[in-house]
Image (cartoon, rainbow, N blue to C red; front, top):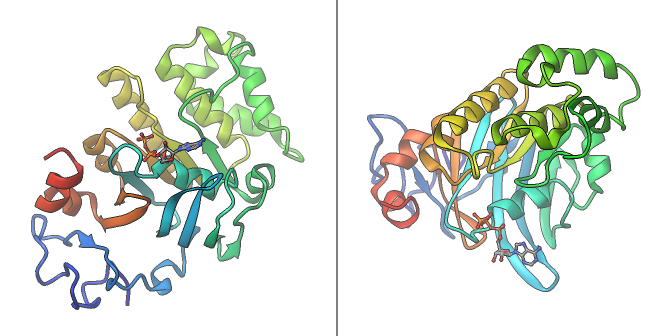
Length: 277
Ligand SMILES: Nc1ncnc2c1ncn2[C@@H]1O[C@H](COP(=O)(O)OP(=O)(O)OP(=O)(O)O)[C@@H](O)[C@H]1O
């Protein structure tokens, strides 16, 4: 039984029976103390955070946070400013060590492992800012992304040029000359040089014009089609959920709701409280 399973507990929480249903599909599921977050839900996950507390110095941000990412999925984290969305990615990538709980990659504990080791395991991370080296060329950025590879670097870079022609055309240009959207594509490609099966992406559309953001979301989908599961933080809720398989609504460091994009967007409570009505 799982939190997203319609047969999950009906004690106290919003459940399949009483939650508003999205266009006849699965309802959004509210999480509270009575909502089971059964580990079986995450049994086949590529990445699973369970009961995680985490934060900065003495300041706790994540509070008993549980979520997972299945193979091949795009999962979007949404919620108010300061909810802890970026902190989830930093904790999953080893930039923060969980105070409590577990972070598992293919069922193996990686909580607190150093980022350079996590990259070797198969998880990539694209931060919101400073995600490329402006003074290096596109080619140099890609080669830097692959320093931990033991072989096959030229082949993988060639495949990335094929997949993302926009950077192929500009191999020898300094990254600082790229537009915001092109830079984001380079940041994805840099992370993909290690051929991760999980990519953590923090606000891919931040600061981009709407048309450019649409292109970047299409590129996120292209990355996903390269057999890469994606856990993404995104402020543009409609667009972010629009390309996702599932979503989690975070508030005050924990998951408040989870469900399909349709269920979350159609849920009145989620919409009013967290998604700006
Ligand atoms: N390096 C840091 N040191 C101390 N506190 C931090 C640090 N980074 C973030 N915080 C705090 O942690 C809390 C959660 O921040 P986080 O960036 O994870 O939120 P978020 O949901 O991603 O929000 P936003 O959409 O505004 O980026 C905030 O209160 C923030 O001020």
